[in-house]
Image: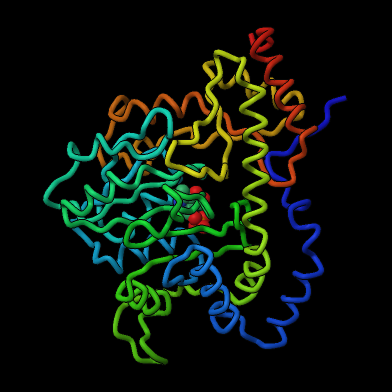
Length: 374
Ligand SMILES: Cc1ncc(COP(=O)(O)O)c(C=O)c1O
């Protein structure tokens, strides 16, 4: 009989917190502070302090965090924003929703994050911002990226949606550029029990603009100084996030321990590439992605064994049908295209047990060593 190993198990993740969840939900309901308000302000202060930065602004999602950061940074129609194609669609969508054009640069073959060596080739007089993505919980190599941004006088916005608690040279991701954008989508390292996101920044000007934009451009009630949108964080999500934030470091440590166990188990397999933790990085393994040649066959084999896997992401953003009008074609960004064919994301979450990791590794070894895939 196969023992099922889920890709993610939110039920077990939340089990020990359910009394506290009920208590804080009751508190928010009793206070009626449901949209914005004191619970959001409390979480904003706690998250800013966790990230070791001046301001956090709670919003409705990571996508809104990116969009509002770009708007507040003055990005608009006619502008170009450099980012990577090896990311979730939202990174590029936020650029498009400002009226600007995403311009893609390839990623580094080992870290899967923005390759600074490709930046000079894609910059133009219209480039106004850059969005490195801390993909899978691995920080992008920020020093050369920020140097490039400074040289060209452009805004640097970090997409830290997958990297809560990750560090670059000892500093928290999200706080290195002009603004950092987090998603609290339920499956993230710090996830709400619904939708939520936040921007962190050390810029007073950016935080003021984002606070106004997230609330219909209101500087105070019914006084609208900008055209904004409704991007407020809701009170219940903020209160739940305050509870969960207290556990983030230990959850990240558990993810790292499981990643290490996987790495050790796979060290003997020549045809399998394990994720690298860059020398400058503290990786938080939102996703543990390996690379193999016969990806679809290996995945099929694991699924048959009851092991749930994912692919992040099967089609790079520059080749998505929605972006056909940008004119990219196959071969333009070869590293992103190649890794998209090879990635398999294995189960990883803080409650994943050593035994479950053993089940996954044994099945994978079976698939790789016995040629069970052919
Ligand atoms: C890299 C990246 N950017 C942005 C987002 C968007 O965040 P949200 O789903 O909260 O809008 C996500 C969420 O999956 C993401 O993984």
